[in-house]
Length: 116
Length: 111
Image (tube, rainbow over all chains, first blue to last red; front, side, top):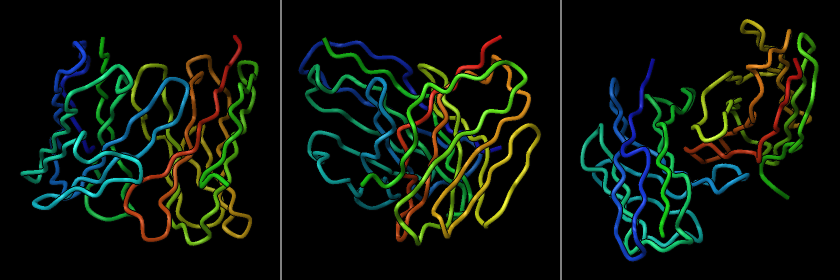
């Protein structure tokens, strides 16, 4: 089945640091990937849709200059949290779908980001 | 009104019982519906997908969809303690490509 790999799984860093998270589709090409964020005891909230070869589409309220998304190839999307602060601490999860909308989204293992 | 609504629970059932999880959605044009299971600290894993009205069975799991009532449910037969997790209902709404998730229902299966 479709596999999505996400790296790193855990990051602890100081406030002001920029953190890059990678998301790879291992056995399929993903023209579109999705980035979600989940705070404790809350559901997954879509941050942005990453489009291969073009700009990402951000959800309302998500700062595009703070959460930089790059989707340079059909198998790799990256999310960079720039100048991270403690309020950015969360569980970040990427997702991708193989082909059409009828296919389910598969999720990476997530990245737990803790900003001190 | 939230796009996808679920009772947060916890829903507590004894081992071997049937667990019934419910979900309603607001976008009548939605066409694709999914149930994911999420263990604490882990990412969601797909349980079931359903696209047309009626029931869809896969092992101990049955998904039910009623588009007229904008209602999706998941039944888990012969519940096991390992089924204890948060169950997320997810929908692809009209004109959307990404899943929209409900807040999840926490299921506890008592041994």
